[in-house]
Image (tube, rainbow, N blue to C red):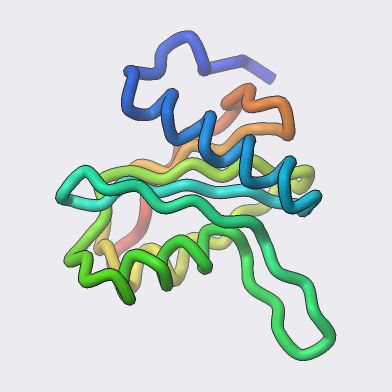
Length: 117
């Protein structure tokens, strides 16, 4: 896989740092961070409880919404897996929001965008 991390601007690199730190601190399978349209950032880890399962990205979207955000500018997900579900992000942010996907060390290997709902 190609490491796309060298191409990141400072704001996206900050999201990688936040996602990585959150994932490590929570000892979670996935860490995520988003930047809203006002430049505020939200970082979260995936949640795996018997009665509650949320991805880190879903938690970030919920945090942004509950903080009064009106949309997202970018997202980063660091995960051990290959698949990242961006449905909730698409629901909230609409189409064409960049979602950068990387491994546990923060090496970005995939760029995708949210889809129209």
